[in-house]
Length: 255
Ligand code: PXP
Image (cartoon, rainbow, N blue to C red):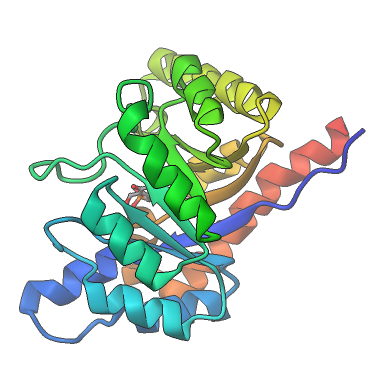
């Protein structure tokens, strides 16, 4: 039996910046949040430089890259401007996401099938610069196969629809979405892709998805920043890590 790979926790600090920007000053600082979660055991930091700069700003990204000791995952839209900034910043990874100005958050996966021609040169340029490229996509077989064809090394499966169904208590929709993720993760791994997951995860859903051996990284933000208001960021990281460990531990019996 192959050895089960560890599951990394990437913490998304966007919404610390959302809070800071509400007053236009320097507090709370996403950089301080990044250092705090790393100290508490996070494996990396994720931040999304949106085209409208509604939370993370260019200087946040530069500071994160310069000052954190763990990998930086730079989320961005697939545009000329963002690729230029990423190439100048040189993060460990870039996660290409769809972006529409009016959406509240990243609502759906990237359409890599429909946009393959536009994405190919960006994936190539970022990869040539030594940046690990991840495509944020729905667990849809056609999208997964195209991600492999475009030679992106990593996909991040959009877990939002599943998490929404779980939160809404819609058991049948949750089960359908879960099966999609399970099958998608298997297909992606068999196509040679590294598989991550993210969007909308909380303790319960992170524990469950940690039981999928194909998934080696979770990127989690909104729930953790909200939870930190009550128990603090460090405690939230420790609790999330425990939930993920509980999920991963179920694999020991299966190996
Ligand atoms: N992964 C990706 C690609 C995202 O776009 C987001 C949201 O910015 C996340 C993970 C984190 O999602 P959430 O904030 O809902 O945990």
